[in-house]
Image 1 (cartoon, rainbow, N blue to C red):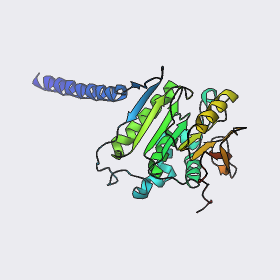
Image 2 (image 1 turned 120 degrees about the horizontal axis):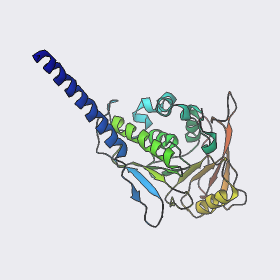
Image 3 (image 1 turned 135 degrees about the horizontal axis):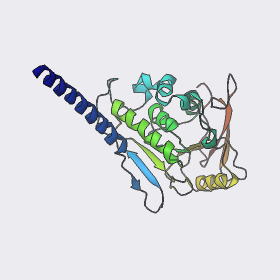
Image 4 (image 1 turned 180 degrees about the horizontal axis):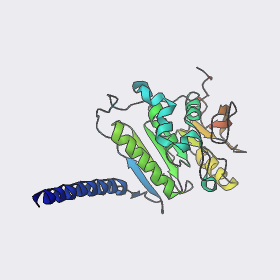
Length: 269
């Protein structure tokens, strides 16, 4: 009888541990700190608050890829984002198109980026481009704006998983915004990126007007041309790897600027 009682106690204890773990995971999933953006009705945002310097499993505080070789590897982002980063798009109805880690790196290599820059991804999906810019460049803020709530929640989960494993730099931040890009203020941006293949003329016109009003804008990177604009066209970045290209082919991203002193870097430099 005492043996049966002991076995029951052990089973009860195990069940309690499992329940506690489930509750803890549920709490993490639900502990998303939404803050309505002032003056923007219906917009939700999630700030990944900069943490104090901490030791990660790769031995140092995250600053940029030059201090974390693991984060220069495309496989890091392929592992974290799975089919999306690999370019295997599963939901064509709600697909803006996905640029691969190799494609993001090809863009970064052509841009002159420093620690004063603010990066914004319009239509940021699950956050893969936002995180790669945060990891592989010295931008002080990496922002993503996504309309679909489900994709935004996926992005929050990916960024939280990253933060719990690697920490974040005390002088840098990531910001994920769930809302309509026409209603969100991103006027502090110096680099704006969008895979705009499904943008109608109304969205493209709004994108053009907002970017023309940002005097500090160094780069607007878009697949669709803007048409008549005050922005200066720097040129195209060719053969960028995306979900809708394969083999040696790639997509062309057009790059505009609002500054007279900005040019694209030479390929392979």
